[in-house]
Image (cartoon, rainbow, N blue to C red; front, side):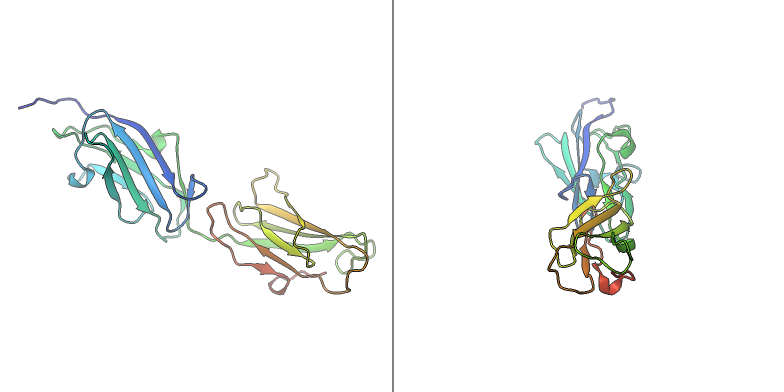
Length: 224
């Protein structure tokens, strides 16, 4: 009979996703919570009510022992489609082989984090103007700049914009904090361009990789 009155302690707790941006996760991405313990613990699935491991926003969890002693573990799960946009909160409370309960550790106690993002971004405030002296909302002559501007509902990656048939327009983050929520693209009119209405298209994704509905001159109210 071995006497064990010491509670296990958690070490090196971290959480990460397999998204290209490891601190965020969209629906279907896998999140891995890793930790070590000061002594072997019971497999978390064997715990009675009141102990164990939970991670918010994920489907069924899998518990993987990554060493031979039972002191290193990974908990994995896939982000569900609940429409949640928040930190992946978690709680870890383990039992050693004698049944001693360790002090709980939560997302608030560690330095790493993963933000769940299962909502698609949207665009608003789309405007199209030129620097034409006579009518900046209707015309643009050679030498004038045509500027497409818009806002996004959340930070997005640099959008792919085609403006006035130009696929290499200069795209800039114009938000005050450079947080990817306001953007502009500029096309300079040159001699020889065909007289036509200006068309544009905007393809965009948020930081997690959720894709918003493409916006074009056809589904926006502005025109030049």
